Image (cartoon, rainbow, N blue to C red; front, side, top):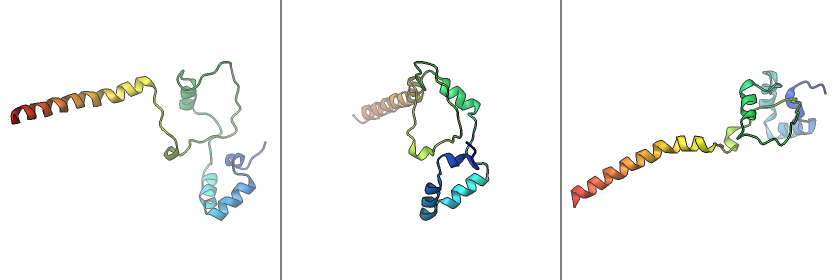
Amino acid sequence: MTLEYSSDLAFTPAVKAIQRQKGSREAYSRMEQNGGWRTAISDDWTAFIGEPNSFYLASAIVVTVEAWDVSCAKHIVLRYADDQIVDLVGGLRTRIRELEAALAALKADQA
């Protein structure tokens, strides 16, 4: 498949017509003129895909990538592994214990 822009995979002529109607075509056109979406998977994404907690593959799967892009973070819920949550929450738990102790001391002084 020969494409002028990598985004032509997602933006068919019909989609581009709707983008023109809705006013977003100009922005996507600038994106295309400035290189568009990536067409090769980067080393960091290769590592991420290979992490055991990212994907479960029962058998080997071969994928041909024509184009890809990182989706808008505004619409993607962050996903953390269990060990990341423990690290993130550990400091908060320590701070809560400190604050609870300080509050208990203040209450004891007032009694």
